[in-house]
Image (cartoon, rainbow, N blue to C red; front, side, top):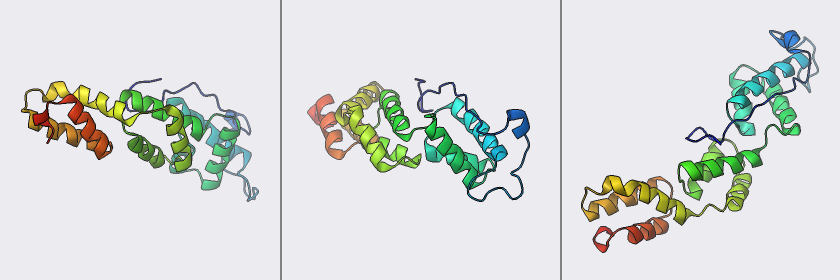
Length: 196
């Protein structure tokens, strides 16, 4: 896994083109009169090649990949067909993406479960898939909040306890932690004069 905010670590991806060879697919447009239900082999090959380059950079959700392909100039039908093909090849999988995202973000960014769910939803992962991944990850909001607080406390040490408590409380709330969890962590780490 790669550290940092970029998401789960990339893996080497070789995407079968699903159509003519790469040289044939380069610069080709869908054939006139191509079947309305499916993209031409050349268009699908181009979409698969683009998707492979995107996935080589980092894992992506199905919706994120589809959106990127459309923004790159491919039509919706071709982008959807490419993502479906990648799903059948097990090269894109929202359940695995969500699991990796939660594992990495919890380890490197110490986010609350609610914040992790919101991040995954913003990437187009279905709420039910994100919730299942969060549940199976065992991420503990109180432990995550404590990590954030312990990281922040040395920088707050020069302030009076009441200022430390207020800033720590605000930081934890911004990270998406529940007010009750936030209050409990502040009370556990600071003397009573920093509680309010």
